Length: 157
Image 1 (cartoon, rainbow, N blue to C red):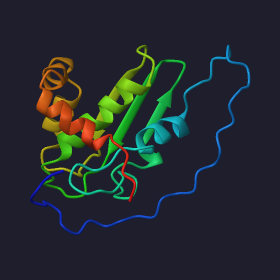
Image 2 (image 1 turned 135 degrees about the vertical axis):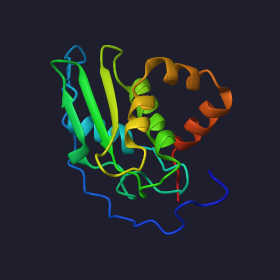
Image 3 (image 1 turned 90 degrees about the vertical axis):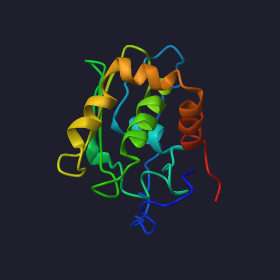
Image 4 (image 1 turned 180 degrees about the horizontal axis):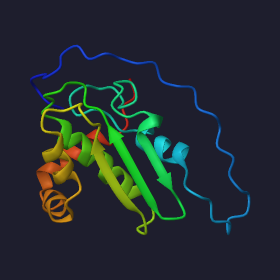
């Protein structure tokens, strides 16, 4: 995690109670991917790069910020950084993108966005997060992949 805290006192939100998922007992059934599954994927172990808290606890991603269309194989996650000048916004978005890339079938188009008006460089962050070539370059950098993997590693506090 980052050594110097950019936001030393973020607001911590209570985690929502989750309804149990009902899965088919037939292993040949194709289960549609829905909002709850995307939310569970993102919060099963994703943590903030600066704080040992989940993105849910920091209010970075909420269920309201997730759109899923299983028929069109499309997922959009809109997240809200904890501060307007959060220098971790791109890293948080990359962590969300990588987590979904690793978890969803390859047929899905994933769109990651900063919530409108929530970041000073919103347009630049959105462009970077959704540019395949830029994301590809980042994922070729072992140091950045290690940082992303650290954010996706479960914390057991």
